[in-house]
Amino acid sequence: MEELNKNDENIINYDFSSVVVMAEKEHRELNSVSWAKTSVFWLAILIVSCVLTVVHQVSDELEIRTFLPFVAWILLLYIITFFIRRKKIKNAYKRLTFSQGSDSITYKTYFGEKITVETDKHAPVEYDYNMITSIKETNRFYLLGFKYNLYLIVWKDIKSETVSADFLEYIFGKCPNIKKKKVQKVMNKERNSVVLLCCFAALFLLNLIMFFI
Image (tube, rainbow, N blue to C red; front, side):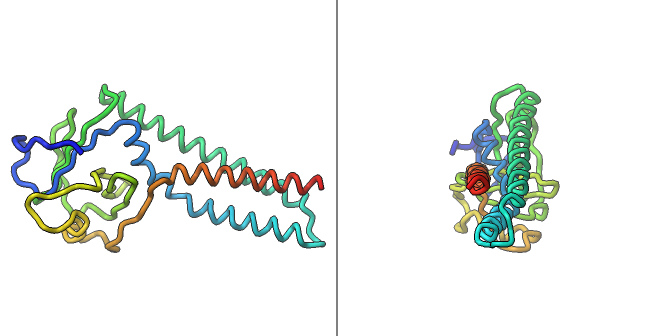
């Protein structure tokens, strides 16, 4: 984590501070939220499909040929949604860097009376703590959620030189609109989606083999 310039004229008093250089790796980690939104749904579909495969295999009245097209359509639908989401994330990063004229953007975030965010391209912007409605956790970052699916990214190892509370305790105490004082873990969601893709493909191959047996 980079050191902040404490002589910055835009920042006078703050309790916590964080600097994140947003490059492609950081942008992908930020978009773990996007992968997390549908992961539970697709996991449930996979479990149901596995159960139905077993039922069709052991039942004398049900034939596997009636279930194979269903598995094929599920696999096709998952492949389409998987690559569309990955393409959207890549395009979002390209638009971001194109609009900024740089391959990375530095976000400096200060937590004091209000939340102040500044970048190397724009003037500081202030946010009230009551605008934060959720906190999510990736491998390296905390994502502070606002409405419209917007997130503020800060390092997990963020420290304070002025307060004794840790960062999460500090944020939960200042954000009245976080109803559940709990951090949602969204790490490795893209990798988990790849694993799900492999599982759907394996299930389809299993049904295809059983079809010809």
